[in-house]
Image (tube, rainbow, N blue to C red; front, side, top):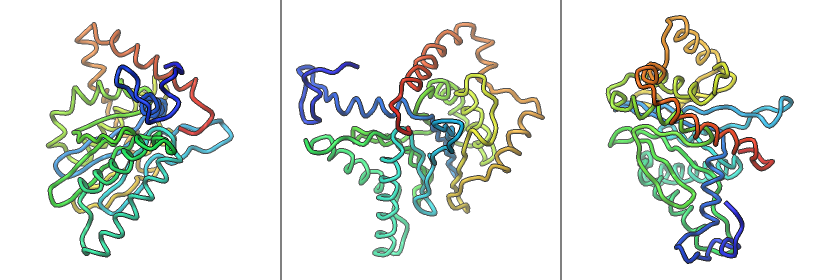
Length: 277
């Protein structure tokens, strides 16, 4: 993307019907570290890659608890994600105080989308530079939503956002049909496999990923590093390989299609602005 006369503020339309400032915000999401979500009938799993700006610093949190039945994973500008997660937490508290019941996930997602949409039509504001995967459980079942900086929102069975997310999407697209009937442990396993696909040969350990779970009879919680490492070791000891690799062996043309998006994601990450995304 290049600067032009139609991207000076968010309220200026280009002749082609585009809002460039909104597109730039969506590009910031693509440059953030990858975040993944999967859901079954009873559980939702969120996972993300931990990236630090340097070897001397710690990584920023990418998964936040909103309520006992809702959590979010973010990709993009961490500061914006932190502010939005605080807003969601306040909405859940206010709803619970007023109605003495948990806030429905769909209603919270619509409120969040409306808040993001306002920033696309005010010249003194800028769009939020963060994408959110909202995982929640309510009376209607398990839900996984993606909230976009444009104010749009979508419900998914499984989804991935951020840099190098295409490799994870490819894995999820080949496996998503079984997710509905998957158990909690199977969802966590698939989430770890999807995360591994985005690492481009880097060894998967509990230090480079975070996993969170919410489901029936289980409040939203972030798994500790020891638990995640135990699961990783268990899968490696059993000799399991990610099914995407097996499929790539069967379909010789698959490697070429997945390489270009990964390279673009890596290039975008290297050229990212000096802020934590």
